Length: 88
Image (cartoon, rainbow, N blue to C red):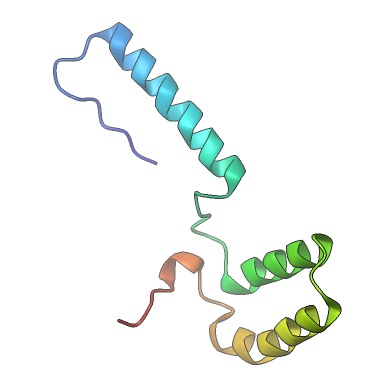
């Protein structure tokens, strides 16, 4: 995350705004809003699948997802999430 200091801000105001931005960034990281640019699709898919298993998704759903991942992972599993874009 990048924050640029607006022109004409006092030192005290800069520190105040910087603290607000830092708190917001931490909150977004904890909530999973900020993506890890180094994470691959394979690792993210595994994380999501484990999360679904822990939160009580049905066994058939998990088995179906694993079956899909067997075909998807060899094709795009090595790509970083930041590299994947929808084809519009």
